[in-house]
Image 1 (cartoon, rainbow, N blue to C red):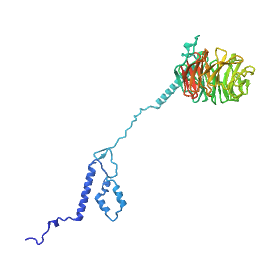
Image 2 (tube, rainbow, N blue to C red; image 1 turned 120 degrees about the horizontal axis):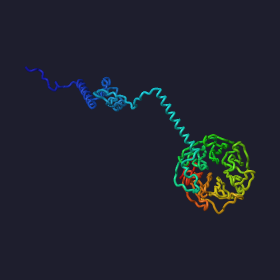
Image 3 (spheres, helix red, strand yellow; image 1 turned 180 degrees about the vertical axis):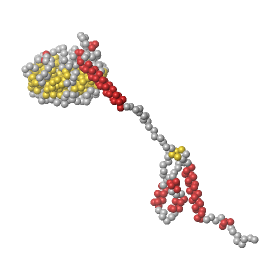
Length: 472
């Protein structure tokens, strides 16, 4: 018997709305978990972090509720899909690999306290021995003849050559170097003396190693001038601290020290009595001192403001001073000849041109001397009364331009050397006054050129930047 009611197949397959939504949400959640963790199978998270995550379909249903807001929707769309936890880089089998700390420092072997003390004592003894050996070497060079000079001692024929290349390049001082000078004693002529505005003067092994043998800091101001005593064992220095000092070369101790009432800018030693010296500077006076008693012997007064240089003439009976007086009527004050014993002016009509003379040099063979002028030339004067100027001969080609550029004669009297404000050094023939050589020596003004008294073609130069070069 057939049923009274016929059921339609379509009615039996009608889905339930509530149940189908739940099934879809679970399938979508299962699908998301499968796609997000299959690519990174070795990544793992805590259980709480995974369960707290909400599927996108559930969030879609929450957005359709009555609490929906546009700003919250924008914030929701900008959130990342993957959980914001950093994944460990080293993992094996789902577990993080623990990294062992590595150290590049190797273990030091154990050293006992007694061994440490012994090592320190040995190193200190080694340092003391090396410093003692260096001091002994320096003292030997300061007092004995150098092997560099020995082959040239005793030669009768001494010809001065021209330098070609730099043998030593010394950054000697922290300030401008005012003067360099070789020791006048032949067996000690390897020693080079330098004075600087950094308040020091130094002695160098200039002919051989170029090493500094002695540094003297006996002044509180800039050392403007320094020179060797004829014995070669002592130095005379003058400074802007108003002091003039005599220093022993080997010990570095001050033998005598005198105080002037002016800044000392130039010095001169009496040729017949080396214990007496002259001091000039920022004053109208020139004082003669006795280094044995440290007392003033004589005072020479002139109507000037500053003495630039002092030069003793024949046998020390007379000397010449140069001043900074430049005016229309300054012909009687630019160069002045003095009688050393009586302190009287012998002549004051020597140089009639309106140029100052920052440097003076005596000819070793003839009765004449030269004067460096700010007119960019070197003038020649007679060393005998009335000290006439040689108008037919002058040495030109270099520039002075206000610097205290020094000039010097060679020991045989055949060559004259001069510095230059452009940094070059110039060599002239004394007979013809022709230029022999011009070399670019320094970047700054070359203020002094010193010719070696024994070695041919060995020259020392210094500049306004604290640099010293030794040429060969």
